[in-house]
Length: 279
Image 1 (spheres, rainbow, N blue to C red):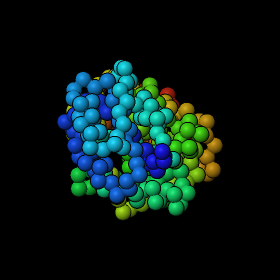
Image 2 (image 1 turned 180 degrees about the vertical axis):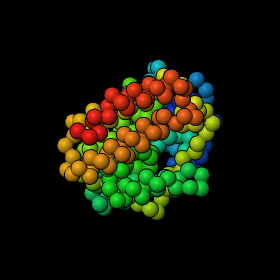
Image 3 (image 1 turned 120 degrees about the vertical axis):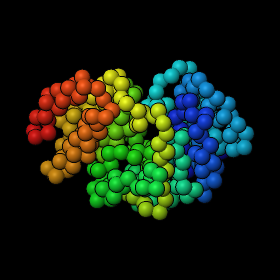
């Protein structure tokens, strides 16, 4: 049996009502030589039933059911271990991709022999700016992790995984670790990842105290990376601080999304770690 060129990994948890567009876009990919790995994170709705229905019409889809709920990081890491492709994509099942997404990224990453190939990231009718910053300096790759294709061997060799003790912002930790190990990230402007912001998602609701603590843990990971990494230039260090720490800190302290006590908690975190930015 021939190995697929690309493994698409989908962490699935209670997304039965939101999966149709993603699976429609996956079934219509112009690159046919892909596998679609669904890791169900102990859903309590009809997610598993829906996936099994998709499997009837597409033999490339496989389903792994976790015995208990672990979170998106564990599900993605689990999918990575099961992946047979040389290259992997980590997609979210409630979004969707262009029909040529995997083909264009596969062509880009193989022809350029890069560790990562990134597509444009679209929310509604607007593009996020991260893509343009990455084109100038790959250290700016601090969000939009779903919009890329990764060399699986590169990820595993450097232990670039999603942190399983972070419930929100885990993708940001993954990307910080990635940019500090990679030598080459390439981009393509001719295909897109479509992010669908839905109500009551972690990115749209008011942050609970537990989620604020998770974001602090995410920032702690980044501070540790900053302390341990030897940057080639001081400019590179500044870019990392700005894009991977300060931008995410500012997002975490959004006054509309957190309580007064959590604002103080984050302020204390910043005061405690401020010396790391100038050392």
